[in-house]
Amino acid sequence: MVAKAEDASRFDGLKWLVVMLLVAVGIGGNIYFSGESLLYRVLALLALAIVAGFVASQTAKGAAFVGLLKGARTEIRKVVWPSRQESTQTTLIVVAFVIVAALILWGLDSLLGLLASMVIG
Image (cartoon, rainbow, N blue to C red; front, side):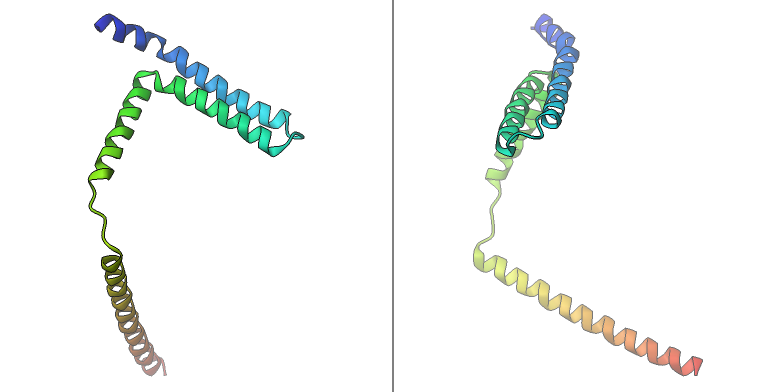
């Protein structure tokens, strides 16, 4: 098990080099084939991105990132989302408080402007 982890970490630099090479090929190919249809270029870039993502996921950091994504997906499933009625009520409360705060700030601005004009003359 330890030897396998050492082999994986030994080839990680090579795998990242392959990923960078795939990205460079995608950028260069997109520029070189700029006269071709946009659909074909996008499909080629998607294919290269999928291959590069697969190669990157085979590295130690890539595997950790995939594990993070799986954990985040699990946590999102645990979230209790508010109902439509709760969302509407919360939105209306926020809007009401924003309007009240705006009125208070408008009143203070008007008062301070009046006081400043009285001082200045």
